[in-house]
Image (cartoon, rainbow, N blue to C red; front, side, top):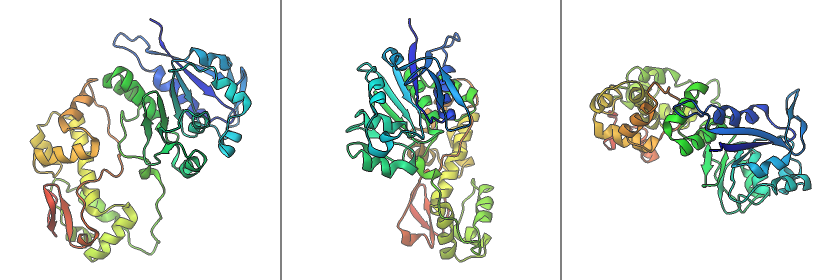
Length: 361
């Protein structure tokens, strides 16, 4: 059988890192016998050297006619999109190139490559994303597109888009997982030394205001609680680590972390649970105790809320390829939250709405 052909469109001003993502991820996907599952080729608007945003060009052997042979077309980012970025329209040369794409071909963009798909009309009425820095401009330029600036990638069947740079890795791994299952995608991720799946969205990468230097940090309290995640944690004890009142500590913590202390603790407990699920065979009740959730029911509730799967399913996914899949920092994983007015004296409890100055079990 012919391999699934992925054709990457290299545009002037492209980012070399993003150009290499499809080759790296799809090129490492193999079946159990070691046979490649994809053929990856690169084309340009004209065969020959293509200038990058670095101090070198890349030599591309194929012209746009190669797009007619693609099963999947990938458009990486470029910093020189001209009328595509400025006016939301294709140049004549680019329009002629995209006309080679056969109906039914899967279309993928990385970062600002989404501008090309949008200008061609491929994203009209569809969900899409791009780098958070460009999201507002993208939406203004293409009002028919349903822009979601909070996600790492979108999947609308035959059209998929990703946020900036490394999110292209997330999207390509997702495509491999969709095409060939978790075991193949996990193996590619392991060989590439990246997590098979990153939780959270772009919000975790958006710069937050830095607290003024004269304000005391809450870092000591965070370090203190990380050594005690398996124990009940009281908000008043966290505040005491910084010699602050509960109200002041809660306000400072939110300024620095972007979320409440209770949400942050639940997120850290989920991260520890992930590592134990990936790397150990501990029973669920013991995982719950080790992570401070107390019961398997509470563990299941919070892992499901944060990761979208049950602890058992998560463990099965990461064990499908027979080894340690590695962890990752997933950002704001949420948890039980309450009204802002409760924060001065309460922490969220996994097994109930809240406990007064009490414990997160």
